[in-house]
Figure (spheres, rainbow, N blue to C red):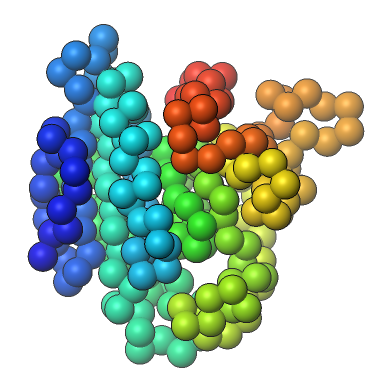
Length: 224
């Protein structure tokens, strides 16, 4: 059953098990329609924010001319897996299947958004699939996943080791430990380097209009 999302312009597309895919086209009033698709991924069972918390951003992007793909991945497809890494690999397979839906097809790799624990699925996908960019909002780090959410992550996880070849933003409020992410430490601005020269940028903000403005500025700076 498709979950109800409060957006008047959404187009329900398909359902696999309890995973859902929904497309939000550009707003009719948008000055132009942009080719880059935005993909918002969530595992609702892990994240109390779910996709609903991202809908104000989706609406603002639609007004700028972006099409968004909303992907809610059903965690139960991985329940038979006994380790955290095996669960993430199974959920990645589910995400790949959703993105192969004709309604989500595009000649361009998406700019992927995820928040909190769902960021771990996004990072698993990133490790072996092309992207135009990645935006993680208050991401849960792999080493802290088991302690933070043992029902979802039954065993410890090693940190990811992929090297980004595309722009990445890590968004978190000032002082939030989520901002001290591996990507920021290893690929963020180094000593003597300007923020906009680094492939990974740390953005102080949250899921509000001010946070969206900063993310939109980062996207403009990187041609996204």
